[in-house]
Image (tube, rainbow, N blue to C red):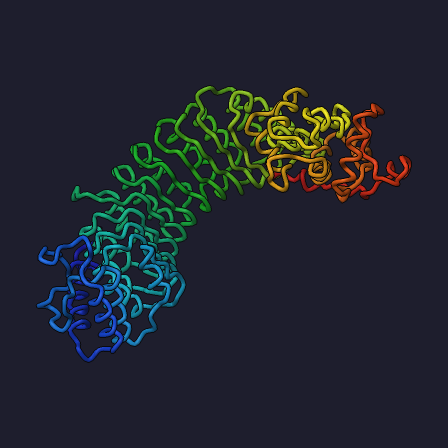
Length: 583
């Protein structure tokens, strides 16, 4: 901490600012000459009477006492939301600022979002005055409002009194050194704030001391802060050393972001030292700094002993193969870490292969998700990934691309197979095409009562008789899709319409086997479109019962020859290669 002679420490505390804020509030509410809107809102609130759950003789505590504001009658029965409106409107009138409509909307929801509205210090003061008396708002979002050093005094003063706001977003407000000091002082009075966003506020190396004071909690008072965002500031190595030391003594924070803070390897070494003694942090974002291989090795030592960290973001940190190998060697025996992000690092071709090779041989690794989105992976990477998925089917890797088309094709075929297994319609159509079955003969076999319609029970029994591997849920989904008129039965027209509609989707998934796709899809194109009317389908359906021709026989429109019916009615579409692009 700096000496007491520092001008920063000589500034008023949050408690003294809070008392001044109360006086300002009293002055506003006690001025009978204020805007007529105030009187109108008060009269409207009075007509509402006391809340239904409060007895008229029962004491109902409030900051707005009758003796304080004698001109407001029955103020104890004004709803919480209305009290905030009264004070806020009066303050806006007195300070000559335009009231925020977003503020009023947020009051009813309990979440006030006034981001990027140019409130400035005075608009912030009016808002803070209103929230002093509020008990319903739990989230306050003030990002990008240029509140500055003056505005942060009003906010911290209000937070010293308000015990109901749990989330406070003050990002991009140019708070600077004074803001850091005021926020530190605020936590001496507030023990309910859980989430605090201070991203992009031009905090420097020395300002890290204020946040270290919060994290270390030297007075051993209760601090409810669980998530802290300090990203996009300028702590650099010196600030990182201070924060790293404080992390070793912190026993409350579960999520911390130090993204984009100009931290290099020396700073990360100190952060790593603190993390080895921290048993509470679960989510840590260190992305967009300059960790390098030496910093990555320091973090790897943390992962060898830490058993609470679940998510680690190391994107854009100049980590090479040595750093990658050190980190993955550490997490091979770490069951706590679930998500690791390492995109935008100068990792050469063998880096992802080394990573998966280490994971493949480990039985104690708890990693479930790996992100290396900008890296193209070779064939060896895919082979290792397939082996890992055998024992860890829920393991996910987000990578950038492939080294050659063969690897691309291999993955696309696997995606096609996965799609058939998940989509009941595609699974059915694929079964029909693979076995070269006659569509109308299938419908005939399903229609056991010869009613020219298939009920849900008949359809389920028919599919089970064919031996199509479907779950009960997939069967239900397929019937819902095919039963277009939702009458509980499927007629030939609906059956054919569903077939023709979803065959276009099947074409995309059959691209992995081009020779088979070309033959089967050209056969599918020779079938008539779904515009055949219901009577024609029924007539065709009856003929198909008597005709046992080739396996791919389809209904024929009345008055059309077999040769004409065999001509394609739908022009074959070009193959869609977008399916091959990895997500």
